[in-house]
Length: 574
Image (cartoon, rainbow, N blue to C red; front, side, top):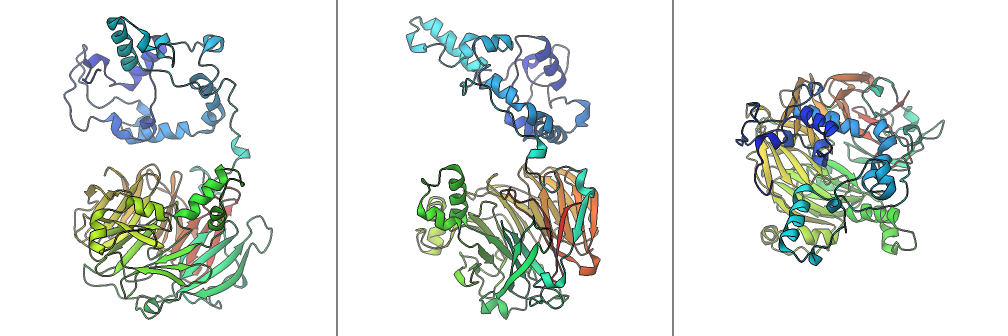
């Protein structure tokens, strides 16, 4: 209150008491800010401020939560968010919009809805410059600052309701009860470019799903192109062509993994990942192409530029690392030709990489214990984000002419980087190293935020990490334990995975994983309990899993599984 902690009885310290007060007192009005659905820390007195005692003698500390939260602020925020995103709220949210922003905010409709507040809370109700009396003006300003204001009235007509769930696009696994009602099938050998008789002899390393096709990278450096017709009743997956990545350095590398082969694990603790996998490849359309696609959807076609149309139809890029010349390379997906090859200042091999969902950012991790943030095919963004230190270290100024521009160096690790995850929406990079340390940095500024170790032993490396949009991450350590953490370093749960996991995807409240046990497991994100499993033992260990992206909402979502024998399996609703 006015820049100071209020008296203890007026502080927010008990959710049940606040609910009761709002429902019994006409002068008590509370607003659920976005943090109530995203940030458990607002309910915890982590700094242990001395907030005092109430008149009843209650010590004001962490907020008292309802019984269904089980004493956990994280559980309360999770369930509160699920309630906000529920079908009931979706069907009634337009009524709330009418009250707060719409035609029921003011006038007779507001009176009929009992939605009337103090006149000073409404926008434009008073002109402070016209109040001549100094005390009256200060009183009005104080009331506005301390008791808040109603938002601007956006519309004067009823807001339309949302479509029902049955009329909208649905993810493959939209809640934890449908995980057991899935059907998995593997197209025949004639529909595959890999497998026993296919042209590709390697395991499936990565699968990229687009509107009308799949791009599949095999560990023998072959790239397969498939036509994908999910609405077709037969022959939905059709092979089109098979090409080879044009790169002699990787072709002669001992890291190339043939199907069913094994490479001895590196004995040195400082060694990078020994084989090719989904951590060495990523496929994206680049930053400008995705921005052009978004712009084209927002504006009319006559306002979109010719450049936007060109980029929207452009072929994706294949990014890869693990080369003998210690570079990260960009290949064009249509011709598999090398478009760009740079080190970005890495000293030693680049062991892993990851791209952002919007395609604009690429992060690489190497043996030099650093990560590099790159901007892919977005010159304006590259110029805006590049820092002076990196330009000095590289000996040149970033002008955006390159297809791939290195913008930041991320410090904090004392061992080589083993895995990466990033989110453009959260502006976060999460990196794991071979000494078991997790570091969190900002993506656009490269600032260090925090680090922590899930395991107390420095000899247990971080094998895999995945990040979701609400700030939770799932990671696996070298002792095969599986953890769910928040980006603030709070451990939510830990289980024994019982296998080395090669790939994971987080969708909604579930985690889809595949590894050495030759099964695809669907787990509860909050508890990591296995909800369902798909047995693909006849195809060997699972190498990668991929879901139809949510931005392709014209296409039903499917799960694509790449196996060690080079075969692709497809999971859909039963």
